[in-house]
Image (cartoon, rainbow, N blue to C red; front, side, top):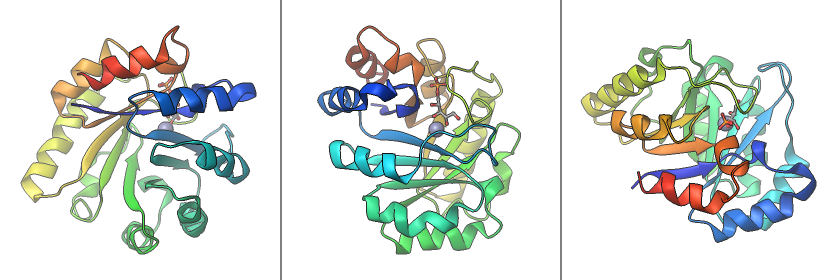
Amino acid sequence: MTLVSPSLLAADFLHLDQDIQMINRSEADWLHLDVMDGSFVPNISFGFPVLEAVAKACKKPLDVHFMIEKPERYIQQTAKLGAMMMNVHQEACLHLHRTIQEIHQAGMKAGVTLNPATPVSVLEDVICDVDMVLLMSVNPGFGGQKFIENTIQKVKRLRQLINESGSRALIEVDGGVQGETAPRLVAAGVDVLVSGSYVFKASNPEDIIHQLRSL
Ligand code: DX5
Ligand code: ZN
């Protein structure tokens, strides 16, 4: 079974309540929330006022993906939301090991995210300290982009690093996950699929979540 974390970025922001009720009814394992700052990535999405409202309504564990500079500034605020997982970009953290420790101390699971150009090998010395590695399969900042094919090889390299190190980290992939790419990602060793437009733009999103979960 594959875990599925639908990305709210592709939801209808005028009717978030309806989309969150759909997520609550669905088999989704988590809800993926994309926070952007217009600096680390060229786009701005939503911040804490929206996250707080979503956290109140959503019954699924929150998988928060920070695409921001110095995400360590928001560890306490994220813990207060009740987030299950805080994902920070390796490229945005000068003291990644400390940030991972602080996320754990705040009572959350720690995920480290890698941009498409960042090699898996940068994680060698923290792989046993993280709960999840999130591989970006598009350049972060926007939904609905084309899947970067190199991700498949990268998942295999990450799976090897995890196995060799004895780490228990999950592998999550984010960007361009749809009917054609999802089975290949799972075959390569992915544990958690993030999917935005493929889920929310579908005529039956709950069915799509069910299909992804069955891979
Ligand atoms: C992109 C975000 C993704 C985005 C994925 O920067 O991190 O979570 O919502 O969207 P799709 O699934 O449409 O590629
Ligand atoms: Zn994301």
